[in-house]
Length: 195
Ligand SMILES: [Zn+2]
Image 1 (cartoon, protein in one colour):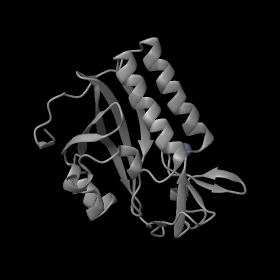
Image 2 (cartoon, helix red, strand yellow):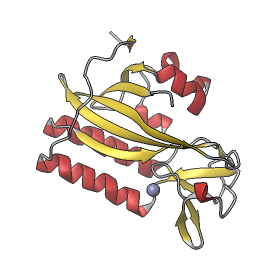
Image 3 (tube, protein in one colour):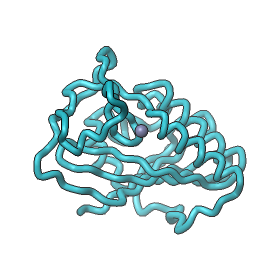
Image 4 (cartoon, protein in one colour):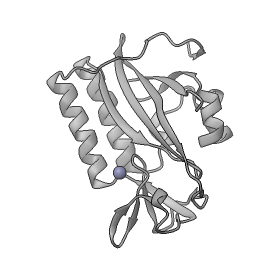
């Protein structure tokens, strides 16, 4: 498995000031040309998130870190059709009311039978959780990698109730001062910084 780590520095209004690490490698896979470093610098981070609930929760996490000056961590999943990929997001306070967001790929499980490729369409009814990758079905939120049902080819994104409570829990833990273990190095090896 290729080690992937991406960095992003934002200010308190969520403007992207810096991206680095494997950003471009990963952006090309996950978001295409539009997500490349040169195209996201100086833009609003939440403008790259397609649903209001996820954007609000990301914003709340970053603003909490800046306000309390303590790190916060939350796990999430961002699959490709042939891989279940688990990531960890660590948000660390920096000076001048900025925050460093570090996304670490923790593990990737290759699926023998890939899921149906999906793309984003804001007008469809099928909903996928942007943090755990589950799909909302009449029977509840279900994991599409178990292959008991085909992945819908078009989805819009949202946060499922259990991910909303995981984010809220991470925010409460940060406010309570819970320790975040093995905090990533704050000086990444490469990147592009806005002046
Ligand atoms: Zn979820």
